[in-house]
Structure formats: structure tokens, C-alpha cells
Amino acid sequence: MALARARRGESGMNYWPGFVDALSTLILGIIFLLTVFVVVQFYLQQEVQGKDTALHRLDAQVAKLADMLSMEKAGNTDLQKRLGDLRASLTTAESDRDKYKSLSDSANADLAAAQSERDKYKSLDDSANAGLAAAQGKINDLTGSIQAEKKTSADALSQVEMLNQQIAALRQQMATIQSALDISTKKDQEAQTRITDLGTQLNLALAQRAQELSNYRSEFFGKLRDILGNRPDIRIVGDRFALQSEIFFDTGKADLKPEGHEELDKVATAIIGLESQIPANIPWVLRVDGHTDVRPVIGQFKSNWDLSAARAISVVNYLIEKGVKPTHLVAAAFGEFQPIDTGNTEDAYRRNRRIEFKLTDR
Figure 1 (tube, one colour):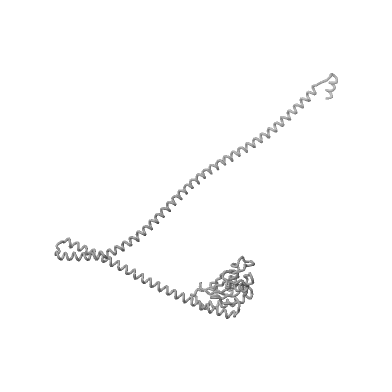
Figure 2: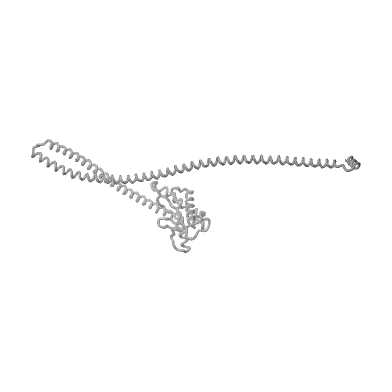
């Protein structure tokens, strides 16, 4: 470059070096642009290839969806066909139902016809009796006529023989029918007599067992009265032995109190003694009834039903623990719906809150 400047200084201005520099710069710029173009072309080609791959993938998915749609259409066609078959089956079933209904009506008609035929044969039986009498009269007439004419016709004799055979057959049929009627009448009478005897025996047995159970009930209540003592909170109401709930439970509770255990121990002793006395063929149970007053329950129970049931079950479970057989115990709940005092005083409420023991049959 210094040489060029020296030459320019020597012989004037020389533009060639500047031109060369400008041309070199232009060539470098063109090379740079070509490089950028090549790089951009490469990335564009990669992008186009990626899009082609995605496009092929989408084409494959579309083809798969088309196949699935075809399968779905085929399945829909099968379902339509099955629906048609089911509708045809339903039509056939309804037709069969109507057919069987018609057959049932026909059977009822046949039954009515059979009953009519029975009445008809009964009427024929009566007619046969009349025919027998008429035939006997005809035989007598023919016999007199034959004696008068001295048996002049062989055909008349043959007719008389035929009539005799018919009469004999009719008499045999009448005898068979009469014998069957006599046997049937005798069987009916014997059956009615037997039914009457069985009913009488059953009533006597039931009355006897009821009387025996009543006697045991009286004896049981007497023992309970002797064991528990004459207390105002223990009483007999009809055929039940009633004890106040306060003996066994706190207000609104179904857990037995310790003092209630003592009273139930006495009741269990009486029941166990009763089990050994009542014969095994008398089906008896001791029903434990829980009763409450009419006031709404307060506490863990939803209603007086629940409270009365829980108290009855508590008593039954305790008696079982003390040796009473579960087969002789029943727990029943009556809530507030079986009061013995309909008043609204505290004394009436106290009387209605009770546990009752009833000796009854199963």
C-alpha cells in the first residue's frame, strides 16, 4: 500500500488498488450472502421435511380414523340388524302370548263344555231309568203279543232277544253307576265324620293346652309375686306382669342399672324353674314388652320406639346370660302407643313407663 501511495505520488492518482479493495469487499459480501442463503435453504429444507413427515402422519391418522369409521358403520349396521331381530322376536313373543291366551280361553270353554257334558250324562242316566221302565213295559207288551200270536215270527223273537240284551246291559250299567254312587256317598260321609272328629280333637287339644298354659301362667305370676314381694311399682295388668322402668333404667337410657340386675336375677330364677315344669310339647315363650310414656325421647335414641325396643332387648340379653333359653324369650317394643293410664300427669307418665312380662304361646 505504501508503494502504491508512492507511485500515486510519483505519477498522479492510481485508482486500481481502490477498485481491487472494493471488488474484494463485494465478493466477500456476495460469499456471505450465499452462505446465509445456503444455511436458510438448509433449515427450510429441514422444516419442509418435518412438515412432510407430519403430513404423512396425519394422513395415516386420517386413514385409521376412516377405517374406524367404517368399522363403526359396520357395527351400527349389525346393531340395526340385531334391533330388527329383537323387534321380530318381540312381535313373535306377543303373538305367542295372544296364542296362549286364546288357548287358555279355549281351555276354559272346554272345561265349561265338559261340565255341561257331565250334566248331560246325568240327564241321560235319568232318561235311562225312564227308558228301562218303558222297555220293560214294551217287553211285557211284546211277550203278550207273542203269546197271543204263538210266536209266529222269528224276527219278533230276535227283536225280543235283542231288547232283552239291551235291558240287561242297561241294568248292569245302572247297577255299576249305583254302586259307584253308593261308594262315593259312603266315602264322603266317612270323610265328613273324620273331619268333624279331627276338628273336635284339635279344639279339645288347643283348649287343653291353653288351660295348661293359663295354669302355668298363674303359677308363674304367683312365684314372681312371692319372689319380688308386694311392691307398689310391681303389678299384674290382665295377663301381664308389669314392672316400672325406673327399677331397671335411668331416664332416656337402655343400660340396666345394678339394682335392676338384682330384680332380673329373681325373674330369671322363676323362668328357669318354669322351664323345667312346662312339658316340651307346649310351645310357650315369655314375651318382654318395652313401653314408654308419650313425651318425646331425649338422648341417643331417635324415638320412643327405639328406646322401648332397646330396653326390651337389654332385659332379654340379661336373662339369657343368667341361663334362660333364648327359644323361650321374645323382645317386643310398643313405644308410647299402649298406655295403661291416658292421663297427662307425672304419675300417669310413670305408670306408662314399664317393662311387662307375658307368658304366651308361640
